[in-house]
Image (cartoon, rainbow, N blue to C red):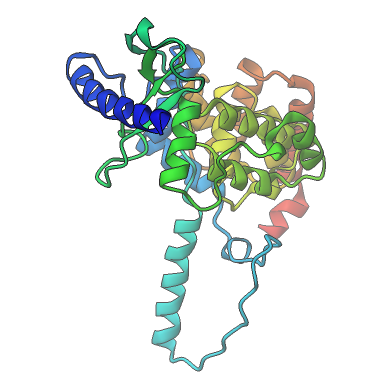
Length: 337
């Protein structure tokens, strides 16, 4: 009974103290990012030009967007309707808008810095409790980012909660579908590697979007490993026409690792896609800008300029370029055109 009353009184005192303290103590920004060259360039993801290029590269295929997925959910029975031409066109427009919604890309942002801000330390509380106490503002007008969450440690330190503590408290009071309180084992490296070897890229990326915030170090780690696996095996078409293809290309362009994607573009007659990817590369790396202006119909020249000035895998990309050039200049290609 005494312990219960003591804890209740302590909570009341803490709540009033936190409110007073936060009025005089600098609050951290809603989202603090690491400062590095690549981190700063990630802000370009939201530029209109970049978004337009990434949407084009995604290549919306409604058949792939609306395909049946083995995600454990019950498949609804097909419904057949008789429609007029006008009604059919209206339904097709709705399906197209729905496809755009499903292809909405997860944001690419810099990794956040850990929260490390002490509000107060009272050594008189040492030994009073054997576990820390977490205080959470559960007001409905607050967001997961803006709500105040503070922790009183057993050594008497009163501090703002870490990101991991904030995530757990937010999920307890305001649970999000598909998110678990503790990080699932599937995101650990030993469990992640077999998933990537099975090429279940979309599955793990969808799970990561549900479990983590975009600036969470674990989200960035999981997506980066997935993008690198896709690039290593050349499995670009498995993510094309999904919401993850844009962030994949952005990552490859940001890390100057576009060669294999360009090889795939040349081998599958996606010259326009190659030119769009190189336009993105130019935006992200103005200091190493390809000395060639892109013009429609001159995609091969644009690729050649990249090979001469920026390519890491020069030999393989050069070979793919020559094969593509020879094919386009052959009589067979002219007859097909």
